[in-house]
Amino acid sequence: MREDVLRVEGLSTRFFTGEGQVNAVENVSFDVREGEVFGIVGESGSGKSVTGLSLVDLVGSPGEITDGELWYRDAELADEVREEFPDVVDGEYVDLRGVPESVRTSLRGTSLSMIFQDPESSFNPSLTVGEQIAEAVEVQQRASSRPRSTRARTDGEEYSLGSLVLSFALPSRRYVSEESRERAIELLELVGIPDPVERADEYPHEYSGGMLQRAMIAQALAGEPDVLVADEPTTALDVTIQAQVLDLLSELQAETGMTILLITHNLGVIARMCDRVGVMYGGEIVERGTLEDVFRDNVHPYTEGLLGSVPDLESVGGSLDPVPGNVPSLLDHEMEDRCYFADRCPKAMEACLERPPDTRVEADGDHVVKCVLTDLEYGESPPLPDDHFETEGADASDGGSNESADASDKSASPDGGDSR
Image (cartoon, rainbow, N blue to C red; front, side):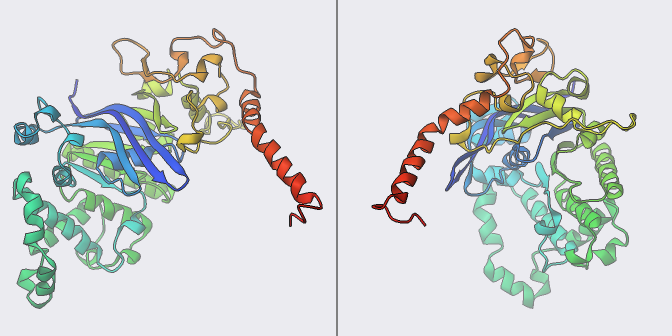
C-alpha cells in the first residue's frame, strides 16, 4: 500500500458575494496516495475547480478557506516547523492550513503545482512563452537555494523595482538566468513541442490550443512538483489533441513518479487515467473509491446518473438517460439542510430530508458514500412523492405571492394610480 502524500479533512471554502455566501466546497475529505492519479469528477458548478485551487492556496477574493485541514507529507518541512508550530505536525505530515502563508507560498511550484483550466488566459500575451516558463524555473531555483524561513524576508530585497529597471540596462542583472532559459527549452521539448528553441521565442497567440496546453504543463513542471493538480487539462481541445495531452500526462507521471490530482467532467478521462476517483456534487464528495467501486459497484444515485449519461458505443439506437434538473446554486440561504441531490434523485425517500453522513460500504474498504442507500434499501424509508419539492417550494413562496397580489391590487386602484 502506497503512503498518502495528501490528506484533506473537512475542507470548506466560501465566497462572500453581494448575493450572499456561496458554499463552493463543503466539508470535503479525501486522501491522495504517492504516485497515483486521483480523479475528481462532476458536473460544472459542483466545486471541483475550487477544491483544486484550495489545495494550492490560490483561492482569491471574495473567496476564503474557512475550515478544514490539509496534511502534506514532507519530512524536511515537518522538521523545520515542528519547534515553532508543534500542533500542525504529525510525524512526517504538516497541516498546511496551520503554517504561515509564506510557508505555503514557498511550497507552490516545488511541492504543489497546478495546470489551469484555460491556458489562453493564464499566459501573459506580451511575453514569449519561453520567457514565462524560464521565469517559473528561475523562481523555483531561487527558492530552493534558501531555507523556507528566510524566503518571505528576502524575496522583496533580492529583486525590487530598481532591480527590474537595472536589468534593462545591464543584461548581467536580468532576473532570468541563461540556465533557466535553457531549462525552459528542455521543458518545452519534454512536453512534445516541436522545434522548442524557435518556439520558445514565440508569443502565446502564435501557439495552437494543444501546444499552449502543453506549454502550460511545461510551466507547471518547472519546479518538479510532488503533486500536480490538473484542472480540466483537455477542455476546449479536439479529441485527437485531448488524447495526446492525456498520453503526455501519463508518460510524465510514469517518468517522474509524481502524484496527479485530475479534475474533469469527463468520465472517459477518469476511466482512462485514474487509480481512484471522487464524485463531486453540490460542493461535496458524494462517493469515492477505486474505479471498480465507482464504475461497477456504485451506490449513490448521482454516480449512477452520471454513468447513465455516457453514450454506450456497443449498442445501436440506444438513448441517453441524463440526470434531470440542475445543480444547486450553492448560495447558503438557498441550500436546505438535507441531501443536496434529493430533489433530482429518482430514489428520494423521507430519510433523504436529513443530512447523510460519509459511510464506508465495507468497514475496511476505500469505498465511501454520502447517501442513506449505503445502509437502507430503497423503500425502507417512505419514498417521497414526485412533486414533493415542487409543493415545498410553492408553500414557501405563498406569503410572498400574497404580498405581491396585495401590492398589485393597490397599484391598480384609483388611489394607487397606474402601476406602469
